[in-house]
Image (tube, rainbow, N blue to C red):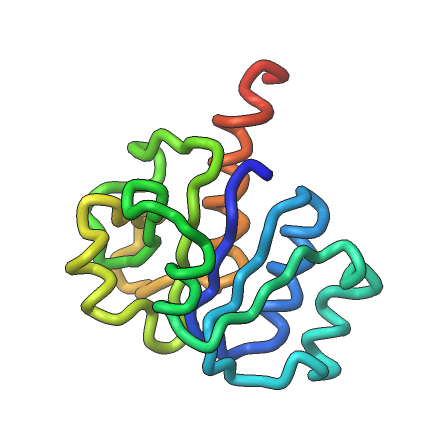
Length: 157
């Protein structure tokens, strides 16, 4: 496994379904931190993931603390992605085993995350200042493929 994707309290099933499909196609683990804004049986979630759910390496955690306890990841393996970060994703040197954490569509990540992981906090650069953020599934795709470019595909370019 190259990197691991974590969605903290995602709200929109279509986004999570699309992200599940992305992780399945690249053999990445997907972790969901509850509460979720939908049921895992949601028809929109299933439709967005199409028939690829059997390939999704999915784990659901009741809260962030449970994830940290079970995952055994060190703080330097965790990076958060937020519009409030000062560094952009192209300043991040990705490593195998990295955990890439994304917040919910409407609230992002709580302030405590930015306090704890501030040095490992990155944003996707955007030119238009009037646009607050990108869609969650698009953001996860952009960051994931930058990580994969660095870790898997740089020799193929």
